[in-house]
Image 1 (cartoon, rainbow, N blue to C red):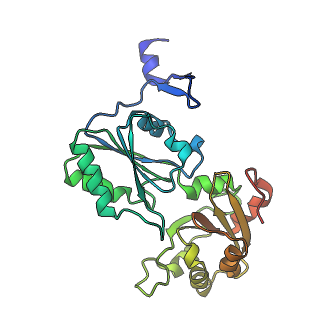
Image 2 (image 1 turned 180 degrees about the vertical axis):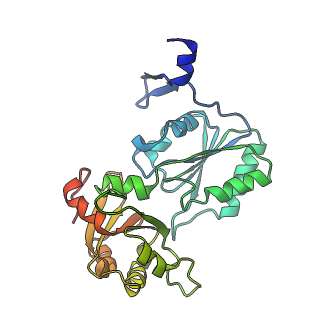
Image 3 (image 1 turned 45 degrees about the vertical axis):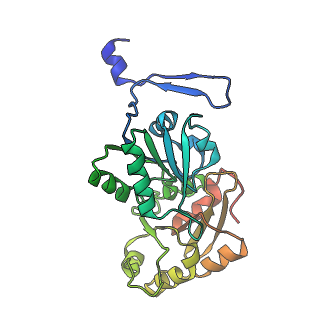
Length: 283
């Protein structure tokens, strides 16, 4: 292979060490420089869904600031010398506030460390990664963005529910539902979403399911429209419950489903019956 060809093709060499986790050497991946912050997505849970860039970051970081949804399996990839900082970020659970997180990233970077900010899913889909990047820019800290697989795509795939299907839908809308119907001015135009999008994927909405279902049905969605709730997606704890939009909140209660969960509304839910392949069958 010529030198030019070698530049165009990453060569992956897996070298098993004495540890359970293999050392991974990949030509062409960047060096994590001192004083930089890398904002990385850990995916929805399954360590196999980490990107190579994320694994590369885990293997080089000095300091790792991570969220609650990052699994121990993924954290096991961090080199032993690295220091871990738990930031929380689970609804209703003890967590750092956002200012504390950005302050810590800036502080560690200015001390000359290689700082990895590790978030579940994709940091830039309802993950405040953009806000943290803006804070780094304001502090004149160099950074790199490493997207991850979002639960609204990867999690549904593990549930046998494709977000789009040529015979079913040609559009999908991703929304966050944690503020729906809380007495504040609605951040989302639920009526327009209901009319325009054949499939709706909702993050952070378990406590607001009844309100969201009512808002969508008031805008014309059928009470009988298929809905699925996927909890702990891509992990051994994954569970899937399917039913009617009108019964979404009761469906979660009857099956004891709790966050972290993804809700999907639309005809693609019916595909889970035949495309289910991972974990327990939908109930």
